[in-house]
Length: 285
Ligand code: GLN
Image (cartoon, rainbow, N blue to C red; front, top):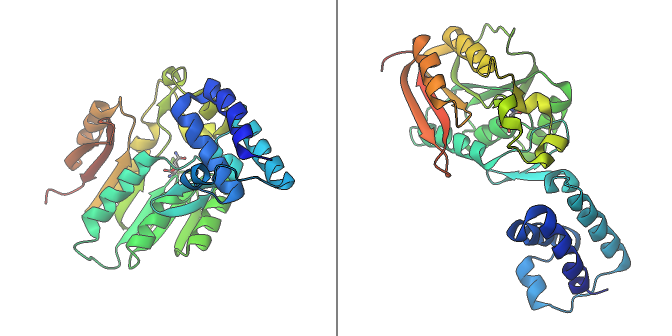
């Protein structure tokens, strides 16, 4: 069977769900997954005909896409900072904004070649943050916490597959206590308010874990406050705390952190120009 015929039919159907550009990108990914042909190669070999099994596989992926299942869940993988992660419905699909946060930390620390720094990622989900940090800063001692045992199963498998020696801990940051001091504490905690739900893509709402996404309108900074308190006790004097944040809560975050006595507060925008990351220290230097 010719792929072109399938393409014609499904592109129209996917376009009505995703819009033109995303629809053809998704179609390309599905074809590449099933046939091992990149969209460019597919164009060149116009008459590529697929076997019955390949066509069935492709149709099943396209039908899942039509009902709004994220491509990462259909294929079971997501790309993050140069590596491939296994994902499922128990973890947030790693986002490009979080790659920018990881990049900030790596750029701050790789050139100075500090060794044996201790890192803690809070609310690790798929494990994308600690696994990337351990990959690029292999001398660091990297730990990661999550409340969800199901998420930790995914994170541990990712660390193993990618070959990053990360220690995972099951725990709730609202009550978590540790004897250890850290040089880097990082977190991308849940930060979407109920009032922002309406603006969200219904696919995200239907397929990604609400535990990883949402906070109440009354206490949107609940996790940030707990993590900040934890950092006051557990960050080394020369250490840094990094957060990914809600783009609408930059000012509130600065106020909250300044109120707790944090220093050197740096707010950073993501590639879309939205307030997205914050870095602070506990001492003046
Ligand atoms: N740390 C993970 C990520 O950045 C999970 C974040 C979350 O579930 N809120 O993707």
